[in-house]
Length: 198
Ligand code: HEC
Image (tube, rainbow, N blue to C red):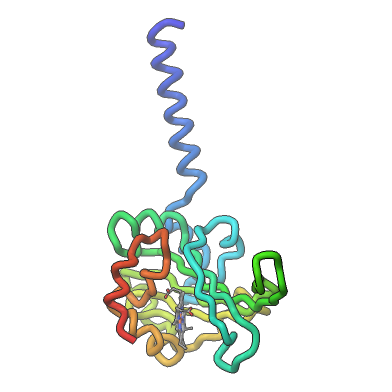
């Protein structure tokens, strides 16, 4: 192989690789538009379990606030935003956070008494919005879109007004952009627990 052929082959490989990488991971702002209708209605991304990055869990011993079986809250973030957060310690416009509520079962296992996934119990979704896009929607404000979904329907949020239904409970984590960032190992923000103000 002569030199120019090697150089050409090398350049072609680089282009193919770059195109491949871009096609593989659409940027967060594009992802965002797939899950938000023009009036600001939010949907749960269907493919989040395979396409998003799982970032961490809260184990809620007594189940929901009415008691019962333990619940897991499993949190996912789109992969670009994980990278962006690690670099800048901020969520980029279009970042999508999903908190999946899981009903659990428990049984005696060789590891001890262990709980595991049994059924979906709903989803909380937050989508970062640095541009204040949906001023007329009750789901958007304070830098995010906010929505809760029943397990039966991932396309229609039950939330009407985030100010009444979400924000009061997130005030303790206001200093970290309303998100409990210190709980997620891949965000490397454990030191921000000092900013949690329950
Ligand atoms: C009863 C209080 C409460 C209400 C109401 C509430 N949240 Fe949360 N939320 C929390 C707490 C506490 C956590 C972290 C601990 C956990 O999940 O157990 C959390 C975590 C989350 C997460 C994971 C990201 C993070 O903050 O770490 C999302 C997404 C979320 N909430 C969205 C919402 C949305 C959207 C609403 C309104 C529809 C809402 N929440 C209403 C208390 C609340």
